[in-house]
Image 1 (cartoon, rainbow, N blue to C red):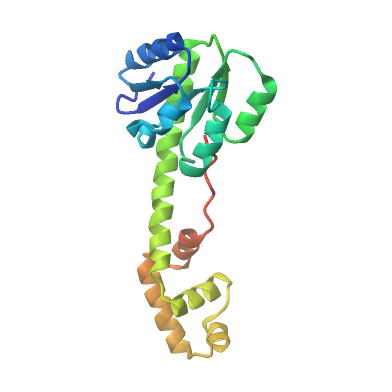
Image 2: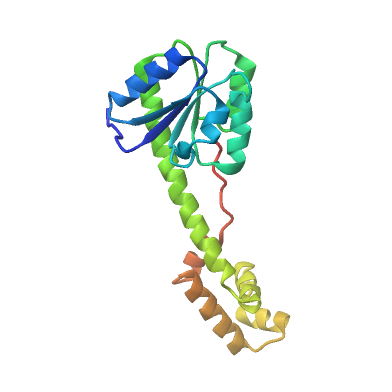
Length: 208
């Protein structure tokens, strides 16, 4: 098994025995692990934004695991969640997976299977963060366009030739070409193929 020693896995479970056993299991592979007795503690912890895999109990006093999932979908959509449950609640499992959980395991679980899924979740998290970073860079570049450059860009994306764009915007073809060149330069697009890739609507990562 390939270990990921720099990854931080967080465990949220109100059962101290589960928390400690998972901590020891993960640390034997060199992973970092932070464990929390409830969802409120996790939400207020500095580890929240550096966590790359969350192992989360479904049923807990106060904020439940499923409610925490809803919270994280809004703020940390890239974070993969592996739910664990001692209840074998099938409807809960189905709902959690529908909302983007990467797995749902019933206690007691197979340790090797859990480790395999944790590592897959960490890899998924890194991929999601990379894609989100690229998307943010594109959005910053798009925001740097002037209104007229954006108008020309919209015309290009609609498949309109420069002559049609010029007529629609009531400007000269040369002006269209100038705006087009500046827009592509700001976006870092070398050709039309790059342009379509850069400004294509992002696929929102499934929350986990």
